[in-house]
Length: 371
Image 1: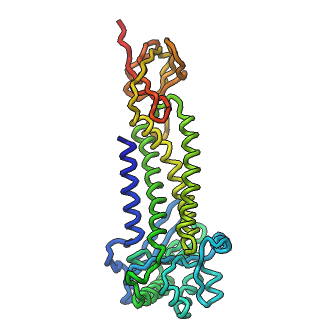
Image 2: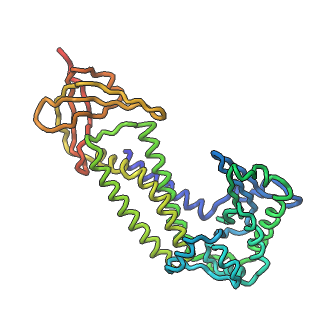
Image 3: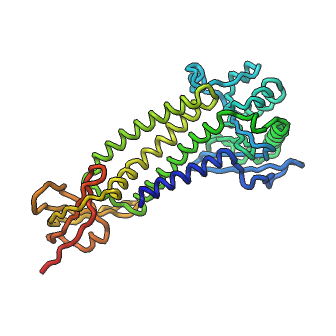
């Protein structure tokens, strides 16, 4: 059940993230925002987490464009030297060397090259070193600022003298976008590929968090007799999947401005997600799809153990002594109900199955009645 549910959940997560990447809206799609600067309406958000602040200004984008403009990094320049990614040039050495435009939209590229005033608006906004990037994913054009507690900027962007030029500039950019052709024949040819790859990475990450939560908070029990062999195989499988995934992304997006950006997302989000969920999915497959008959072993309970955890439910195990033929580990994990039923010195039946992937697991622990 859990294995199939995991695959279904991954499909839903990826579909949702793909929809968000292509049709993102900050609130309602036609939401102009609840803040005003004169006649200009905008959206504003200030969040803080452990001293790290994020401030976002957003205005309604008249057409569903998809692009991101950020400061160019060494990774951007390295990817271009490798011919992995190809950024457009804009007849402006200062702009080309300072910023990286993640977009292959032909008309946006042409207008950025032909309109010095538009490039100057972006340059002016990026004079604020706290500005991370300006992006548009469908319905809203957003300027995002990051700063730490030590920068002393708390409340800075709420002041009229600081927010006014930001809101005015964003509205100016949005008005310019409204004049561009965004027909089905004139669009970024790589946006679907990039969005699909990034959505898959995000979906795997979300599934990873859920699998860890399921194990730590809900299930908190591992039926395998020895988890290390499957764990080692899972790590090897993760390395193979990541390598193939990165190669596919590089080949599919080569020659676009998205390639190395998407590969970074795959390596970080996809890699972390795979680390968190692969073992649990493999374990579920090993146990749930095991149709072999169980073999019964009789063991004596030597000692009961309760393992206390500060942020998750306690786990339970039994130290055992095998009374028959075969080799068993010295300890097995059990659920709380079994732990409460048995006592030291009592005999129990272990119903052990070989596992679909060849990793033996405990299907059932049954106390033997004393007469």
